[in-house]
Length: 589
DNA sequence: GAGTTTGAAACT
DNA sequence: CAGTTTCAAACTC
Image 1: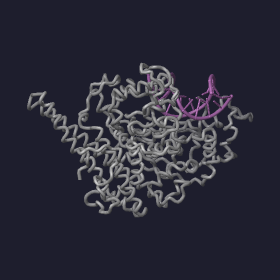
Image 2 (image 1 turned 30 degrees about the vertical axis):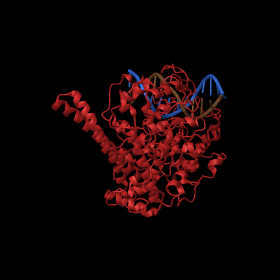
Image 3 (image 1 turned 120 degrees about the horizontal axis):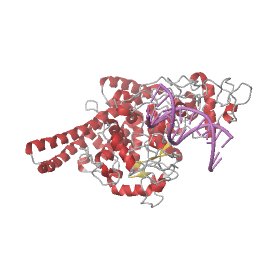
């Protein structure tokens, strides 16, 4: 540090003009950024994708801003359709927790901007570069990560890829069938993410954002080589963080709820249903602060899971609802008990997931049958009218993604290839939407585009895929699709927000019941019992309302199609086999 | 806002 | 592959 800006790149400690070659850095020798005369063999993989970079897409406002939802909730699970899967503003922990948008207080904020000084934004140090985006409005100095220096930038990308072919791939993989621990990656239907390389933290306890795992809101895994790790399931310190900082944070609630829907994949939301660790040992007596790799404490995780059985069975964030109601080492200090603790049950969440999954399938069919251009126009028109039915159909892509996640969450039904292991993460990484409004580097897009988007889009537009090699050219109306996605996302999330608000309402009702009972009856004991009895009818309403709410979002009464593709009411649609059904869970039509 | 700490990336 | 350096973000004051 402390080197002057604007000097030769990479910066050297003893800068001179004597013609002495840059410090023996391979890349530096190969690249002459000042001359732009770099001659590097094209990356074998990237070569075929090399295209003349178009102007980066115009920035779009993240949908989160419109919905007043935490960006992470909105953006995490989805991928901008043309976003390259490997892009790390998607999946980079850094970008995940603080992607292009800040999430604190649930208020979407400005995009993340780098402050690079010495890397020229052409190394992975730079978040923008690492994410495959151009710097745009950053505070960086001597930036080459822009259109004007596309050639240099492309060379840097290739050099980076040469060093690490996976440099731009997701670091966090929600791996339902990972290669290392395939059988451990799911637990009770949840998709569990972990850092591909693992962190190497030494001093942060993996509870600060220095830690990529923590930043990605995932637990450390056996991939990590961290020391003194506290980022594991059942960790008191970790739980304390959740409760102390986020228990009352609406953003957290929304994120957690989002995780409930998406299966807590990747960076989405706070991983309130944390990654279970591979049981590599039975060191049940390891303390939470035991030094050594995280996996050495896996015994604790197992133990914690037993103590906290409902945690694994419910995808709803338990730090809120269950803290204080269950005895767990970490939670024992917590006395807070959510008013929703008796209202939200595992089946509620499953019900919600089921509804969303069904909706995604339905809308997929609808969209597939709808001409793309018409769809776009219809979406815009309907958005103005507030008729969400149109969006439901146009949402197909996103919902397909969500549906996948949900299905994974409930059915654990996924392929086992390495790529597919990454795919869900790609599709759900917050980067996708975090990148909204961020000019995506066309060069990186071209370099990085691969089968992931293809799969994603194939699900959305099975009949329109013509060129699977590049997602940016797959659709005849890419921009329209982007808008459709955005609008689709807005609608779905708005609806989901309504559902959450409904939950809040139920909680408030319950609270009111408590208060009234206390003041009017003066018999606390009777009040408590009566109130508990009242909670369930409310819950019954909740079950129905959740389902109907979402169903109506797709098919409002006035617009409900009568065809079998999209008109089918939720209750009529086949249910996910993995979702336990109960009578009071059945959506009420 | 400046300085420090931290850990990933880059490099040897 | 291990050790060191560089770097920029996270954090502290």
